[in-house]
Image 1 (cartoon, helix red, strand yellow):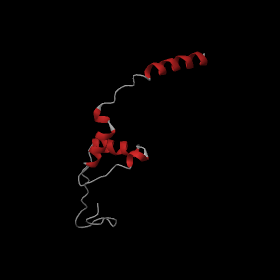
Image 2: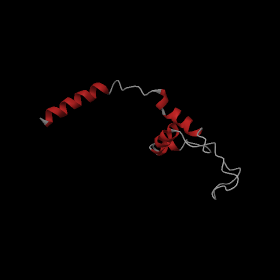
Image 3: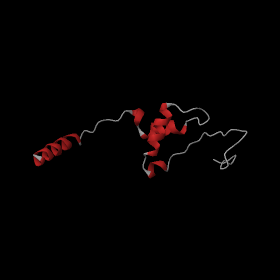
Image 4: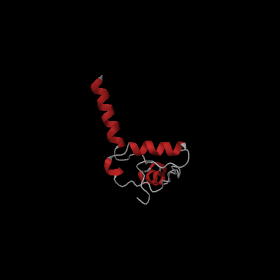
Amino acid sequence: VTRASNEIQKRQLERRLPNPPKTPKHFSLEEGLRRIQNINTTKIPTMQDLADVIMMLSMRPAEVATLCIIHYEPGESNPPEWFKPGYS
């Protein structure tokens, strides 16, 4: 029974490999990185922001190397200790 099941799974996999399903553009790595780079950290995050951060955390290190979050404005009264003005 197990051997027959494995053969069926193998045939189904071989049938799907030449024609993998297309990923919608909204879920592509480039779109996700664009959305992550434009997250406004001064506001409460939306569900989409949280989903994008989860996607970022699951990326491979080679993909993270190109990530650059370009918008960060700390509170003027009490900036974080690690924040350096003018550093980008």
